[in-house]
Image (cartoon, rainbow over all chains, first blue to last red; front, side, top):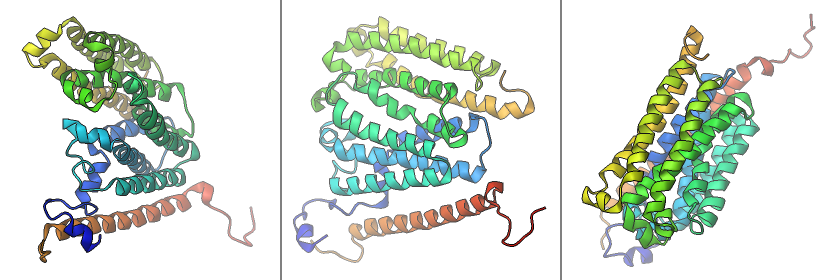
Length: 316
Length: 54
């Protein structure tokens, strides 16, 4: 940074292009990364076959890094939207701590490192799915569909659904019904999760001009969509219980979890906008929170089944 | 604006440099560990040159 640029920012507390480590770390969307790490671990752990523990750990680390890199690239592309939305206004780029160019360079470099290292550590199939995930999230979702179609969340959800598939491929070197079902569960889970958020963060998406379902088709249609997707999700989530990665414990747990989730979606569907406004979107907020626990619990039980299998307790 | 030695800018630069340094050390450790694991696996083991096969 030149002195001239320093002088031009004498009235600001933060100076561009001098972000700290925490600012760059924030570009990786650490909270989203938690989900990526966990689901990738479950995919890897539940997969048939052996992987050296260190290789497994390295694989998860670079899957997470690839996910983080796509988060940084997404923040680079969506900086204009982030500046408008209340929820994202304090992110490193809108707040001026990191420049757009820095975020782009950071994201591209980390993407390349993550894909190459995953390839070296495991196999080309896992690396190729990771590369496709990053491409899909940035080019297909962020650049193309997010600002164009109200089904943006549905399509964007696919990017977040790949990690267990990558974890599975890291061990087996391929794709199977089980890994495809794990993908489908996250794919179907994402829309109700985000639409619930869109219902109670109402003005944000309107202000940013993102064609969210709540904006384009109305809030009643969004409530119907949440219920339909939750029902479809329940079928998949219980269905995977009858495959190789499932077992009696998983089936029992998934039936209970899906019953809770459907109950939440049903309550959202029944409510009118007046009811929701009256109690400040209490049900929608509770459903959003439940959706996070739901996914962690569902994948947690898949891992539990895999962990119990060596003792003759897990699986069918 | 005066840039004193204790300016917040220096703290942020320091944290960034420290983070990058640790990340690079971590990467070296990962590559080393991965190499050890890969050369220790059976498929990587080759007979020594000139050693008669049984």
